[in-house]
Image 1 (tube, helix red, strand yellow):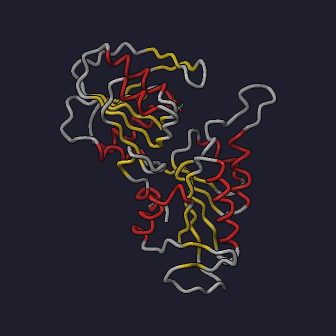
Image 2 (cartoon, helix red, strand yellow; image 1 turned 90 degrees about the vertical axis):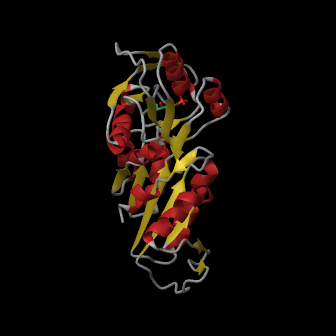
Image 3 (tube, protein in one colour; image 1 turned 135 degrees about the vertical axis):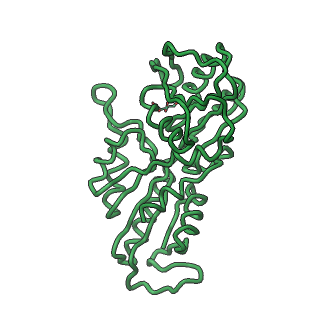
Length: 280
Ligand code: R5P
């Protein structure tokens, strides 16, 4: 059976459909609402799908794990379609907490196995203290791109995003892969430099693991604006889209943003459920 935090209902519903396993509401004694049997004695496994976009979603996940444990299942498996704080994977200054570790440790105590959809850095998987694996949902982004692109270029806005761009390209089937170089000055300010490459006439697909403030993508778009590129598509796995990120991107000239439903937003045009289902 599958249980979901409020924030992961869409991707959990789709996973339920693909796996043909019921999506249930768990009660405090471990029983479930709905039309499946309420036998509390045992069940093979409980899959909990969570998108920890907020502190409350994180708490929601820990409570679901506690409820699931009341069923005494063979296995509790936690799927993080989006892991909040994953970017804080080390102490960025002396004395600062490692936030990714702080959130991962309690999650690890309530589960036997963790899967994380496109963690910013796979090093965070060690923080759970139980077997943990990444899932790559980036190939699904290719499904939202027209199949008649001209000389397509799959571009990471920084070096770390190159493999996401490559993953989308491989799924699309053809095209070059390149990346910009990024220097982050603050949470909202980034400076970008280009490679020597000219992109004139090419259709460009920007691809990143996430868009948060939109600063990174806006900077990349402004560089592309100075070149005579063809159509421009902005893609990411996790549409965090904090504050006025969407307006910022539209002001920068993008009218085509595509993301997965790892976080359920209006731009979530493809689902991470397929790649998640492949683990089961
Ligand atoms: C950072 O390295 C990530 O891959 C993204 O580029 C970054 O998180 C995007 O953040 P923002 O939209 O705030 O620039």
